[in-house]
Length: 483
Image (cartoon, rainbow, N blue to C red; front, top):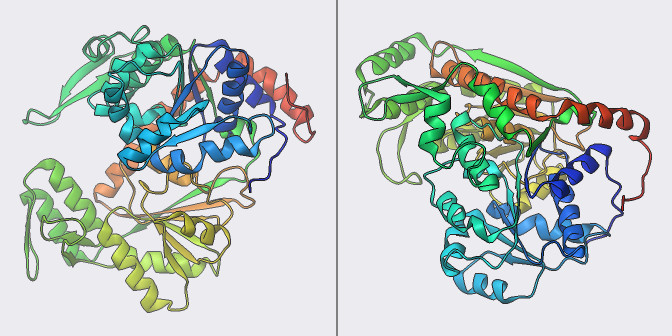
């Protein structure tokens, strides 16, 4: 049974609540750990009590849909009365969940197209909450197209995310469209691109065009959406221990590096028993990143059965050294390719057989980690992002290979660096010198700069100053829930 708690909001949470209540189209861009869910649930409950809305649809990542929203509502005294229905599972289970009388219906984003088609895009809900709005950044995705068509069903929309920028301002168009129907950034993506971007050719193929922001476009876009989007960053409101990044550069053996450069030049590499060829530039970059990590796939079969060849152990050796330096402190390791996972586990078992090793593939593993029953936890950033609290199990992150996606990178790091962590989080990023590892690092850094600029602009400094004054005087005082 879930123990209910009295909700005593921080001042910044009251500001976020007011933002949702005051805006029928509200973008709430709160950093991970600032309490987006409870803020939104509070607004949902009050809107239902006021008769402003009758039925609410929440769209969320599958894990979050199954394990967060209903449980969070039950946790608080002021929202426990909300009746929720989780629309996940088989088609029969989903249809039964829709038949249940409830205030809030929670569905995973993979099934939103099915839901829209079921009701012929005339959905029986008058409020929409999109948890992790950034997962709708692709205007070509089926999930976006479905919600775009069904948007007139809702008289209120709330979009929640901590990473609105992602890897490009291009991805903002679809997210903002779901909030305002194309009012601020134009009804069509083509017009948005024409107005704010220039084309830059980076190759000869039809897919070799890049869109680059025009001078002044970044600020212009921020100004356009500033009236409906509110951003808050963790460091402005919570006194968390520091997050320290250490870049661990390694050199692969000289003979292997020569093969790497030849592969980069010729798109072909001869290994002991196999020949590996890259058919495109994109394929080549992926294989070069594998090579930097120390292994490379030698066939194109199913991922679960693909074979790979070891090429060097430079990263493995540094990883082992870092785990040893942790001196018993639990370590979270982020990996990119499945052969990374296999090689890391094999190396740890060989060199440190007493270690308790886990792979993050179910909720039970989360509990084991937070109960300190695991010494080393391996996780892919795609499976260790939204909705996971890992801050109670350890404070050390090792990136065996960096992802291209800024959202995955930030979400992964925030699994530890969030409210409840008691130690500084040490983040070690293992990279090979003079390889595409550095290209990924620079790409993440550039995208982080744009993301920070967007969040800074949308913070609405007039509100921040007012809230921060109250934070200073009331942070440690218990407050009654506001009316």
